[in-house]
Length: 283
Image 1 (cartoon, rainbow, N blue to C red):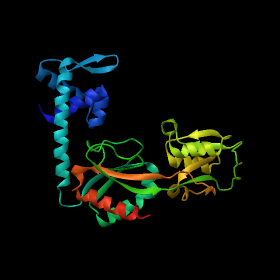
Image 2: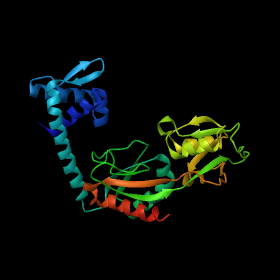
Image 3: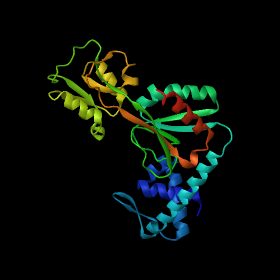
Image 4: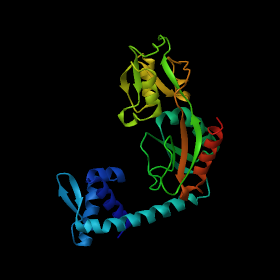
């Protein structure tokens, strides 16, 4: 079986949709349909059943799924090794991080990276999704969640300090938060320590706005909607808000940097990792 056909098979099996598989692979919907048809003709049996819930693997499809995943791991390992063996620090470098971290912490590092190595092209993928580094969804990731995946080289980069902010010209909140609006992370991140800290500090306050974007939170804070806990590198640079003097500041978060061990010899990745360690890790 051709690996490119197996990639189509795996994408369809995981997404249960020809259209979503096409989007993930960066090809057209008809292309995925044709490749899948070729596979089914080669096997002499259908690999998927068309149901109301999408495409579901047949017994034949289930039997080859594990073999296809083994083929995928081998192909990805070869790809990572080849990428790691390149001599020159050049080419695309895919970086995963939160939007605020990329814009207010990582940006100077990336500027220095491109100044020193103009042939490297950084590509930042902002968001909270935990990308699969083994599949090269990203080459290197910066996040507040420690890496527990196998074969990942990782280290604590720094501890990020957080602060409590309000509108620049606004009055100081009441000690118990009566009449105060809280701007926090959304439901998916409601377990974050700073959310609990803010709710406990102002027990009579009411949550008025939530977002997974710290940058959006900062802008809503500047509009006077309420108070927000923000990373200091972000909050200290947003016009229209001021840092409240909290006797006990919000809890900070550790920043972790990680990449797959097969990528440790990639020159452009090492260049970024070293710069990030020197420029951020020393702060």
